[in-house]
Image 1 (cartoon, rainbow, N blue to C red):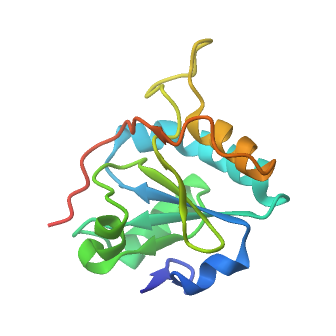
Image 2 (cartoon, rainbow, N blue to C red):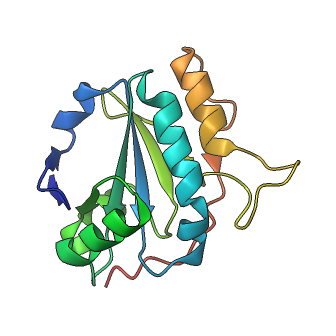
Image 3 (cartoon, rainbow, N blue to C red):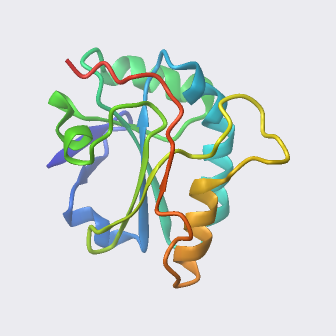
Length: 160
């Protein structure tokens, strides 16, 4: 499956997974307020883990997805390129039904974590569960994730 992103790049899965130790696939939705709240957190995670061989891939699987609209949103909001998933094939393969749903794949294509980014859909609180960060910390250190699945907080993807 090949996904073309908003900068003209292409990701061919599962072939491209070997380019990184871990690939974090995050399902994107232009209209989802929860995704917008999580954007800064995702960008911080991308910066923090890039040196550890972690690659982040935002994917728009919604029926209304267009390269032009997503390129504009990425530029305006400082997001990395957003890959378009025609027909929601990747979303269906990874059981993604919500924006912010995240899947961490290792270089062999095995799912190592799935679910939410963290437990807060607004601002971070002292008792926030940082599902994705904790999973990445564990995986980068060579351990199994303490939590292999976290609850995703986001709007239902409009796949059809």
